[in-house]
Image (cartoon, rainbow, N blue to C red; front, side):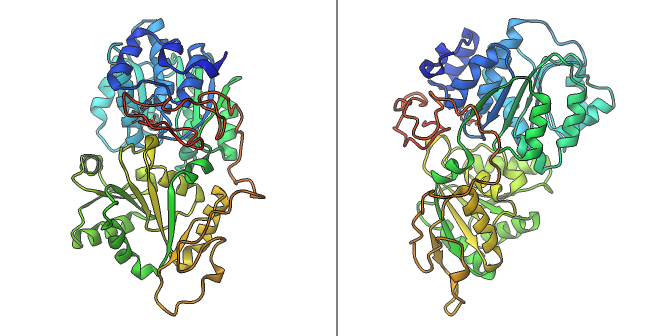
Length: 457
Ligand code: AMP
């Protein structure tokens, strides 16, 4: 298969029912992960995709799944599911279900989303009818399996999305329980932004001779976003946040906090400073979360304050800035956080407020992303020197010139990154891409070669 030459959706072997839906979506060219994944998936192969949100991975799996269902147009039997997608969060699950509905709008498929935090009744009814596509979070799906509302032993294809995030949330055992109920004969799709050992083990157990596709290696994503660190005392973070949010170029921002309580407190402080902000975290009801997201999406609130878990998978266009009000405990979360901006080829920037206690976390992030982040010292006069600061942090200025990669150690997550296929999804510097190749109708712009996995719009 010569993936190199496949640059249009019409080259990928998709049926007209889907091509029409893509035209209506305004997609003109496949993203790298779509170009590389769709042909082997249409052949029924298993797939291991190293990719994160923002790369177009949802369409990469949804389109071939819909086509597979159409190729064998039978009704799902009551209580059975033909295609199952497992996602870690409610928001991501809802988005995936919406994507299936959008791409399948001329295909007459029935799709349902089954997640926690909402009532069971309507979910039971949908499952009882039988489904072409079920998108579910693992916990709620297990509940339904336990009561016999749904059976998986006739499922033809299964997708595990954001597997590394599933691990963070403790879903590996539930997933193994679910997978144990699937028939032996099935197609498996497995997506993860990173490959920690446990996830590689799960992939190894689930997948049979998979095609491996890798786009946007985690470090690359971090590199293409303009990043800046502010060294500041923890007590002065809130004022600095307000100052940053008032900058004219800061239009739509996600502010990350480490805890749910922290998110609420920041949102309250912003409200007191006349900055409209919505907060989203695990303690909020599904309704509150949806309202907060809607207000952020529509521009009603230019700021969304979120915890890592709540924000993962949120796909909002036009996020100009990400602010790390607190550093994440796990360095990889930094990459996921800042990946909320600069999506689909747009520009984006990330500010990180770092107090003295957090400097070791900053060091871990710099090691993982193999870069040093330019830094400003915003601490009170007389603060002790930053000589203990991370490599490259430049007190009192924007110095901190990135040091490049020579001798950089491998990031901790480095697991299988095979299939760094050449062609539309080629790795940075692959030189295969035509300008504007991944544009939506009209507005294309040339992309720097290192924007490996995304696309311009
Ligand atoms: P995902 O990585 O699946 O979350 O997709 C990120 C965003 O890209 C979503 O808003 C999609 O609607 C959009 N998208 C996916 N594929 C394409 C494409 N080929 N052209 C333009 N936009 C796309």
